[in-house]
Image (cartoon, rainbow, N blue to C red; front, side, top):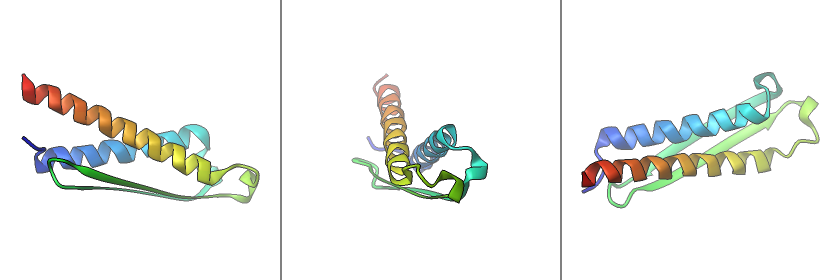
Length: 94
């Protein structure tokens, strides 16, 4: 049994919030010029998730590796999505 539309929407929201929280835990918001996070899910079984983090930091953060930060935020988003999927699978089998 696959995910419902509501579960897919919740999955995307959780992944997006996780990526945003991750970025903001590493860089203060006033040092971020642009932060766009998109999460898309296709299908219900299996679910294919795409996470995109686009970040531009202020000049004050010149030596900071924004690409690495974006990649780490994507990893955090996938980890939270995977956790959510495992939790939903447990609920389905009970």
